[in-house]
Length: 173
Image (tube, rainbow, N blue to C red; front, top):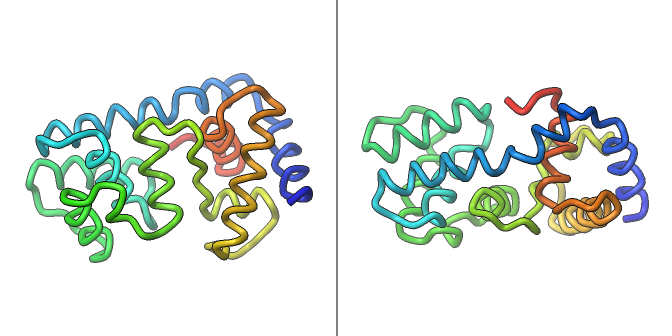
């Protein structure tokens, strides 16, 4: 894990003030989307965040938002069948509908859990790993590493994850 901490720290050290600002508000903006989805569904924030997260696999954020809002309004949503199935399950089960570590953590982070850490392809790239998903044990190690780096920088784990993601991805969109 020390290597993960070192590598994530090196990425975080490259942050510009603009990237830090983007990271500090990214999940707050995502939470507003989840509130809108929840209102449309007459549900709570957990359901709204879970629906938003359901549409995240293999989608850019703008498409993710469009699909989640359209779904919440009862409109037809085209895309990966599993994403739609997760969204439908999310209405009844909230976080429990999301079995994947990434989608579950993403929903929790969107819903306000400042300790939730999302490990996706961009977080793997921050570590120089060229695969799309980590093993369960790697995921936990990476999440712990992000949490340690967050403590070093005096921020929350979800904000540090957003910052690393923004630096590696190149944009908050």
